[in-house]
Image (cartoon, rainbow over all chains, first blue to last red; front, side):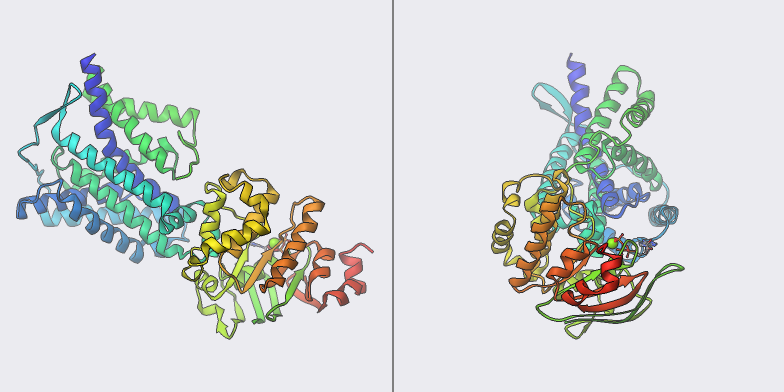
Length: 288
Length: 234
Ligand SMILES: Nc1ncnc2c1ncn2[C@@H]1O[C@H](COP(=O)(O)OP(=O)(O)OP(=O)(O)O)[C@@H](O)[C@H]1O
Ligand SMILES: [Mg+2]
């Protein structure tokens, strides 16, 4: 029983970070109808930014989230403004090529700057554990979950309650109608890509104390983000939140009860089952 | 107020508008009537800058619309209520209305305007928490017009507001348009319900396969032989 609860708990905790990655991808998709194949590479940049701040200035990886959010937002917004906005009306396959190409440029630039060596970011608490309601969980995971929860709550509030957040949702629901309401959809697209990148970069910062850091780490996360987003329903933020948690729990359970080598397989079987029986994803359409 | 001069437009190789001349003066209700595919919606899309004209000039109060982006056209006071309503489906009635007052110049009047459109369409007040996508066609049409009014438009472009509505509702929508005009909003109304729109319009244009073939006051066109034959079945 304690093993079950323990793996459930750590699944939920890591699922929170997955949710952050998935929410970023789904916001970008919702507003632009573009699948961002550079998503994992943006996360990877977040990891390196955190690593850099830690190794040069000694800034704690969780504190560096406060730097990561604005820097990665600006990075995403500029990428949108200068590259992706030019391709908004283009054929889907060209947009896919563009984001794949941007991702390759990112990972290769990082390789030039930091070499392709694996880096490890070790903090005093990297292998520490805390006691949550009698269940012992990894300390960095627990901290990262609370940061994730706070960011997600703030994002929900922003999208539901502010004019600009509502304008982003309006653009996602009907781009042409949004234009007719005086919403500058180029601007909401820039915001959406900025927010999506900030979320991916933050996820990168949050996992940097527990993952190997290397230039090609992104592609695995792009795939994961895609699975989470499809699972929850493309464009649905609530769906991506759920999808992230479900994937986290599935991975953690199958690592414990089957074997850690099989966890990916179980995730993809789950993914295929959802595609078969509910192709629009768990949420289909939702308010966010 | 609005002046369109020799507007030409093509979708790719398909030319759909030929030398359209059209004018709307402040305070008027002007209607553009024509059958399916005549180019009515395309004309409005050119005004709202959802598409770019091949050639021709479009000005509003002297400002050159062809230099603007669609959100800037809205800021000038030219607001379109599109064909098919295009309500934000996953937003409540109130949220849809809030999006109508997204532009800065309309934000200050948000509460007053919500009150104004709720008075115009009491049904929307009853349904203010309902999701747009779950409303009936008639309710969505009211919401679309109300959302357009939230922007404080000087010129309201209405694309087939009576489409798909029950006869009783059609009548009340046309009455509402007259009422909106009486409150000081200039209206450019695109319709297939030729009889009703000619009755409320000050002036009218008849569009056929992308060309203006007739123009005159609403009354003149109601009495016109060609209009009576082609559109009124008389
Ligand atoms: N996006 C598009 N791409 C290609 N052709 C189009 C497009 N939209 C409209 N058309 C064509 O342009 C012509 C004019 O269409 P438009 O929608 O302006 O007609 P309309 O007068 O509004 O008709 P209706 O009363 O049916 O709404 C039609 O022949 C239509 O098939
Ligand atoms: Mg039309």
